[in-house]
Length: 124
Image (cartoon, rainbow, N blue to C red; front, side, top):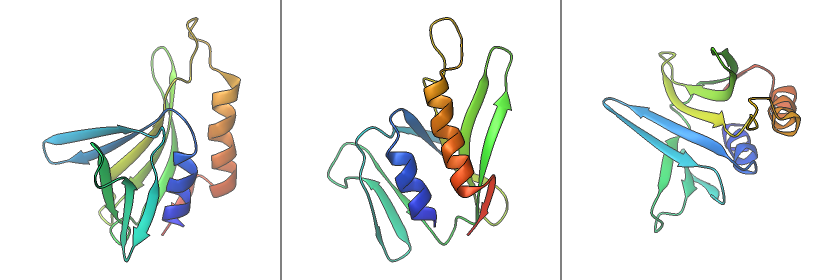
């Protein structure tokens, strides 16, 4: 199920994947990244390319769809957590607002469709 959610996110343009680690953050845009799995490792992007990530599917225990109210806008994301409920990976829906700071209905629909398909919390 984890690979399926990630694959669905990769089909959407302008998803920003954010990997958190002790003292470092990596950001990767979804546009035109591939996905494959070998054993417990899910790879997004190409090993030979300038940017890719390896996700240990056994270490991800839960995903949550999160809407976060901010002063000028609402943020939409899917966040992936380990067994200590620490965020390992976030997939943030970007370009959600137009130049007038109005929410784009077509972008919100993409988020809502995924939320409807998977539910707000997914246990792996």
